[in-house]
Image (cartoon, rainbow, N blue to C red; front, side, top):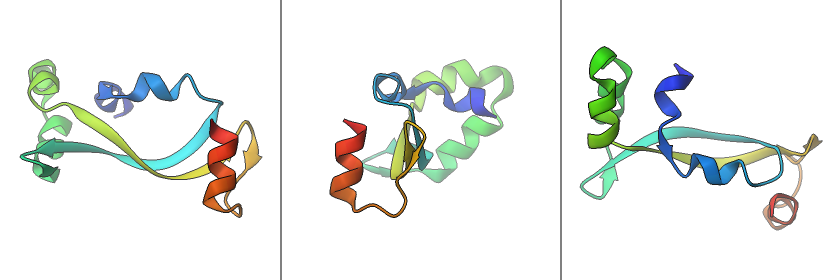
Amino acid sequence: MIGIYLATRGIMQLRQLRPAVVDGEAVVWSGGRLDFEALQRRLIAGKGLRALVRELPASFAGFDVLSVAGHDTRALPLRDVTAHVI
């Protein structure tokens, strides 16, 4: 399943940061809003996946940083977590 989501916008920029565990999910935007049905279409696309990747690009929406460079950040305030990541 992870191969389906590797074609997401912005994922390569994450690799330039310190190693981190980020909690989030893949999302597809359509018409200015999240489109869960479009995301599901990518899951079952099979051979048609390449076309859907172009038609319905996915993004990663991260909403929590669990660790940075092996250090647990779950108990830290957001401003401190941000300082560790950048």
